Image 1: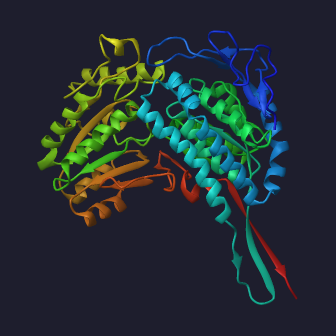
Image 2 (image 1 turned 90 degrees about the horizontal axis):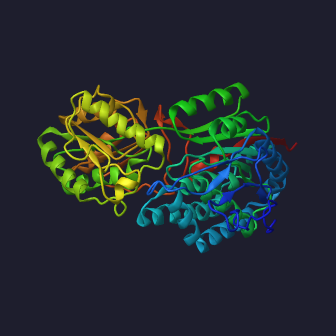
Image 3 (image 1 turned 90 degrees about the vertical axis):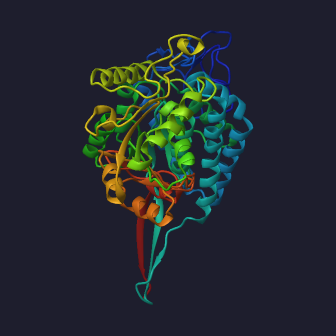
Amino acid sequence: MSTSTATTAGTTDTGRAADAAPRRYDHWIAGRWQPPAEGSYLPTTNPATREPGDEVAAGSAADVAAAVAAAAAAWPGWAARPAAERSDVLHAVADVLAAHIDELTELELAATGKVPAQLKVEIDMSVAYFRYYAGVLRATHGRTIDLGAGVHAYTRLEPYGVIGVITPWNLPLNQAARSLAPALAAGNAVVAKPSEFTSTSTLHLARLASAAGLPDGLLNVVTGTGPAVGTPIAAHPKVRRVMFTGSVATGRHLARLAGERLIPVTMELGGKSPIVVFADADLDRAAAAAATAVAFNAGQVCSATTRLLVEDSAHDEVVARVVERLEALRPGVDFGPIITEAQFDKVLAMLADAERAGLRPVSGGSAYPDGPAAAGRYIRPTLYADVAPDQPLARQEVFGPVLVTRRFTGEDGAVAAANDTDYGLAASVWSGDAARGLRVAERIDAGQVAVNGGPLTVETPFGGYKDSGFGREKGLEALHEYAQVKTISLALG
């Protein structure tokens, strides 16, 4: 394990250039800071203020090659270690992350502009991923198969080797930890590419993991754009599996690359998730859940329940309760900004298109025209009522603080409305009749469904149906995503 400073002059052990503004971050490869092969860096901005932020290395195929070489050299020794030893190392990583929460929070705040309460939830969960997979690793094994007295047959869970992990900008540290912890637990090495807009916390995670005792080369982070870094990762002959979280379009591109190479992929893509509210539900709790869908990360969550489907007799009352909650939300206090300029422009363009189509918001519908929020990328929490299901706003993922409502009648109507989408990532059902809530949940085409606020945690598998992708993260299922099953059969006679 290397604890030395980066090889570039004037760079501290946090990877940031000393006495320089903005600060620069190199790649993390083979347990040390590695400057970009082409010598270029990418600027970032603070979404809450639009002020210049830190710079990150602009990676290239050469940087990916170096990282993959380090990972390929490191994983066999790691995979050969007993599960208990790997578990101990991952517990140590969790301990170190927990001891440096303040630093990680500072980095996430500068990159995303999120509010402190949300950051605490995300970073605490990041630590929890390492604790969880460190624990379940020791209880996850192959199985014996009874083929008769003269045969000993059994299975083993073996790592793929080098895993490529490509994560988005909306929950940078949390989504990195969600993939890295099970991949490492299963005995793999990782080459990770965080979003070029929000790379710093993932880089810091890798440095802290090395400090905690994770062997050099097991966790490498190459920063840069998708075409320059993400595509070379998926195309590299020594990368044996790819995990991607992001847009459907990019997912299709990476899946084509993986298909040509005949390697498996895990895809967590977009969503247009429904929240179904029956008239006999606890309407206040349901309204609070609907408002939270746009307040949490300003709606920048793939699984956000942004289609509010309400039984006809309760529709207007639910809308009124949601609007009351939305209009009480304060930018910078209760919700954060849109993280990238391109996404900010996209959300505003979708709102403008909706206006041209004759839609009028019941609440919100614009950026902030003045005050501190106007300096950042803040968009007013927005609700459109009674939006026809063929409208783009009702079908396309906005990835911003925008809710649309639709009425339904009866259980069959609820299910039909919920499934009227190309996506199937998540859903929420609210009903005073728990049995009906479960019936509806089982009929919705989505990878996870919460009924009456049922919690979805580190332990619960997460992934999509339809255009929302395939494969599962979180829970025991994620550990199996990163392991191959080998069958061994011995004739005893």
